[in-house]
Image (cartoon, rainbow, N blue to C red; front, side, top):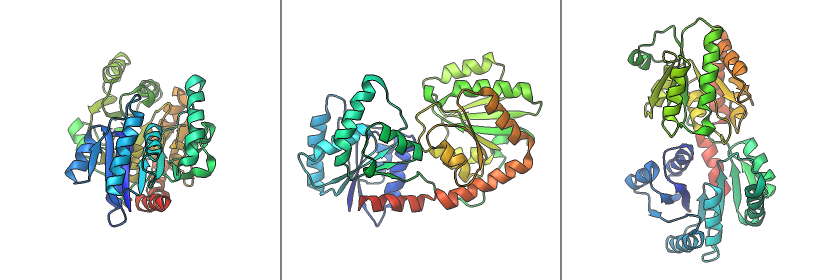
Length: 363
């Protein structure tokens, strides 16, 4: 089966990892192809791996020309399935069937956006027109499915297939990063992997940590890994609140597994647009208890099936800080949640099983 993965921006975030995992695990089951608009880390990886790829302009004014080029490419390569990663790519793929009708179009929606006003009206009309033409639409979390239905997507087309990760088994803790950063073994270390973007709630994170500092005398430090437009603003806020010793901005790191193995807990402070976070899955795979906001798939990860952490309301600094303090003060609770996180990955978020579910959806 020839499967073309279609994405607008071939960068380095969770959606790109989703595509990369499907291509890697599809060996012997599918023959992958790759199409993108804006080049980035993922397009470089695809080229290095020898995956047949082509670049096509999918800007707002180029939808129909992109659809024609996509149809021609699909015809030449006998593509059976186009797997689109976002609504824009999905519309381009569905329009391309006007010119070459053979491929099935599968959409994975990685968004959890509740639309309102004129933009909401337009997208509901588009979804009602286009979603019946999809072979299958994949939601990566339960809230994602509910929001898509609210936004006009045909419910019968939707399957919930969680994101996943390959189970690492019982994690072996490390202290190499602690030594690198000069952190004592008695320091409670938290980590967050996030772009410095408004929806990631890093300003709220700083406020919650400032509240925590007033509630405990125990040493703690939060490692913030990532880059983005708000890096300078968040750095300034950390200085203003006197948290230079309690927060370390590490920038974009590729050794995130090692950082997680040096940590005692994982945090997510997103305010919106958090579907099924790969960063949280990686933290669970490292046996970390969670304190996360109630957005997207965070509740599925922290509390559904098996509890391995706490879910709090975005913006409630007192509750967020209190949940961290619970983990700091209760070693047995940390150990319980740590074991539960590893167990949950194996039972409910095993990437190999979930990838097979996606391949079955193609059929």
